[in-house]
Image 1 (cartoon, chains in turn yellow, purple):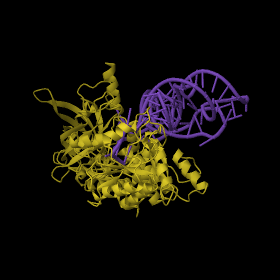
Image 2: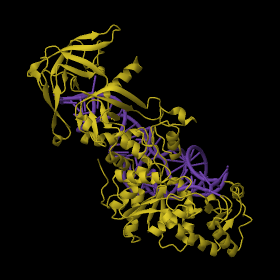
Image 3: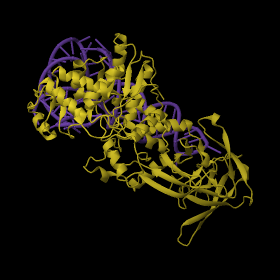
Length: 564
RNA sequence: UGGCGAGUGGCCUAACGGUAAGGCACCUGACUCUGGAUCAGGGGAUUGAAGGUUCGAAUCCUUCCUCGCCAGCCA
């Protein structure tokens, strides 16, 4: 993986160029960035891009990155989200050290600065209702009109704002607005609301306040308080930058931060909208915020995606200003790349078919030595029991195989991985004609999997000893949505993939798989990567499929189906 | 319609006036005790369009086109 090196000589994305230039010019000695989530939902892969950018930048240029909760709207925010967000950022591999902050830490200072604007005639209390404010604001093409309350005296504004804080007025009765320009072509400058009355208990400040600053008023000033040098956000805030700058310039803030915008992440077959994700959760379409199908950090983690893969993905996609949609295959590639190197290999049979080795001694058990990871010799080997009765994958046998099918068939010899070469003698069927058992013979001279005469079967199968296999539930996951652009036809929920989760019972695992720790993703040989689910118990093992292996046989089959 | 921003192979990104690079995806072939991995090779871009400046333009200028964002007391 080509991870970007800290060497500032090489050219990075446009933001890294700006930071490098600011250091070169002496404007700053090191960057201070921040990741500013609103605790109103769980973090998703799009946030991961931002986290990697902000924390990565700080690491590479010897600066620091703050974690700051943008908790200015108690109506939507919860402590549980704060806790989950912290856990997710840590899991991703980043550390904010002592620099954990909340916009709510600054409420008193923010209030003082609001007062400052009032005193300097740059803010006023408006009695207009929300609807009236909207009507006065004008449209994209028509200028707005001044509120009739725009020219109140400083004294009256001070009095009213103070009484807003004291809780004299109900929600929505009044707001504090900046006095800028109702005719500005930039609607954000048409006297934006700075404070609104919200009688709601705040997760951190409790009932200390009943007026809360808006994002626009809180964000830049919080940046200034923390000495943020580069305040990086997504494109939709670009239009807010003039307001960001106006506030910084009209307030006695202790530092001069600058805002830069980059394109948020979009992924095919995926929705990255907190609003929609919240609906999926509340409407019970998924198992929760951490459902393995969710693009949330916690969902990806439960699914078995390693943090390193997510970080590599962020590096791979880069940072730019043009709206873009990244193919989900890129994420999957980054994850497979890590897992291929690191995941221990194990045997598991998802859809078992009994195999009896007729010439293998009854009651005999051998411990076959199997490599844990061919990509990593240091991972060593393990012993897997072999016996007369085995399980193989039903898909690995065909009674009447097509030309390109290399696996087991009557009369055909294949290798059982790290065990023996076996030949199928007969397929036993039940009354309905379904194959229920394979009668095979083995070649004792091929112990370990190699034939002395150099015979090389075209296929190698995974297998399990019938007397030793451990039962488990396995959940197979696919994309949550059926189309690359969910909702493009209007109804997002109609695009939900009914096959996004398939629960398999009666799967069988290699003994020892029960001990795989949560968070350790393993490869079930020839099937894919799997991780134990949080629902798993000692009595009832549950594994999630993280991703399949790349499967050219599946591709051949699909093409055959299309061709036919 | 006003303002702001963006257009580079199917997708993402680079090229900073010197002749379009890399990754993903796709297709071959080699190798293989995972139809995995790995390795080698391949197809595919008149850089949104049209003009202009220049010896030379994806880069500079002009006009146009397309797409995204903004009319929350959300962030």
